[in-house]
Length: 322
Image (cartoon, rainbow, N blue to C red; front, top):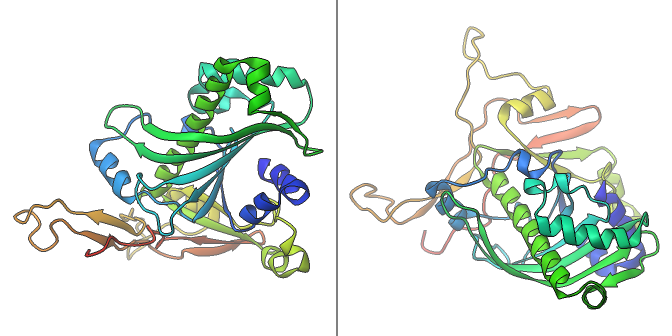
């Protein structure tokens, strides 16, 4: 996993990154973004995400088949798509563009391919730090993002040597290539935001996986200078109820007499009612907590790993006066 490569780099070369990784929760997705993300959103979905988007944890990392991206809230208890967030992406130098959304943009393929060829077979990681100031989903259209790049560089994963930074990139490949790469990396950050939007959908459930060695590693003396590897760390996945029960080997919900039933299960979430006192006389204009619903056991131990369905995960705070 890319996480393990970056963990070794953080321990050897990056004290700031080390601190970030030690407090980050890792989500893993065994798919390319285009395999599960919607191409567009409905008006109702757009309004929901604009108001109720939230990072599952203040420091959240997502590794899919394309890259590893960290997302951080700038402000505590941030909620909504107008809250500023920082991000950092780690992309293997020989990343397969087919694993990026829509196969990667032409900017990805041309510009990154050109630079990657410059390093040959050297084990290299492309690192980008940036900020997102606002994300605007629009019904039936592609999502728009406002943000920028703070730093980008190509780093040797073995030695930590910075092989090429943005100044050298500009001198060696020109402004056009630098702009194309910067735009493509911001597009990757937007994809990570949309992956979190997928997590935020109340019909999707987050499952926490805790390996048996996690707690022992967390208490060890080495914990202050080490990052847990992917087989040791708490990991999170996002699944539908049927997928969860299959993975956790849990029984399907049944009615008296053994008849299977499909309950309306949902995660705890927020709902904002329109400011229409006739339609909603008691809650018009208010945002309220809709309690989650899960039928049957929500925890299990399978093959030495503990799993927990996080039914009550929701945005960290309600707006004032709600």
